[in-house]
Image (cartoon, rainbow, N blue to C red; front, side, top):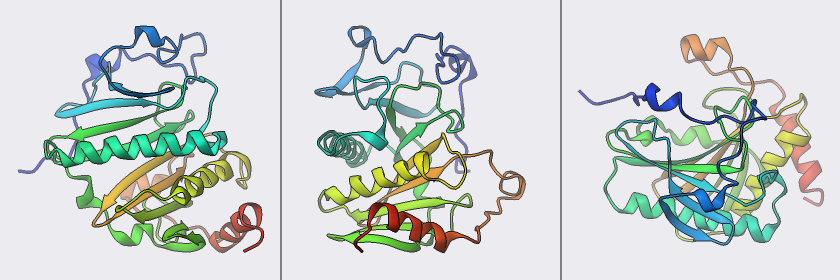
Length: 255
């Protein structure tokens, strides 16, 4: 029988540091001279093996985005933003190409409701031995109201969100990096943290590689609706058109 669930090692999980809520906990990513099992470095950006590999049948890595513990994806300079996204996409796709894993996931947690434990800006690239995340993907989950499009990169607001409510999508061909991909992603994150119709402190970014396209799904995080938890039923809000127009007004005023 195919494995459909990831197994979480609780004996390792209880040892993980947590400083999103526990502000007294020292940041392990700031102690750079103490980092081990480093895979690649590009200035302040570091990719290394995860010290707490809580997922079984998986190869876990952490991508430290910056040496600024208070940094944030929503405010990175364009120079650092592109450096980071090029770096992350490169190593994610290289891990895919090794053929060692059934699939490779690339994602980011930010904020107390995101499922993360460390506040320092970071992402994760994880090779899964026996689960293919793409089997649960459908292209219509990236369909949505068009916000912006340039150089073949599309920025949309989902009309069929995967979990429900507000999910932004950015997509580009996998044949070459386009700067608009990172810049649209950054605008989605900035909107969630600064202009959302209700206070938002948390989000996730999930990268997907389907056919010949790379997608980033940017999800605002709140307490998950019980209809999704209990029945797997996503909900679509009635103000999607308003939000898409609001993002255009704030970030693309001349369109």
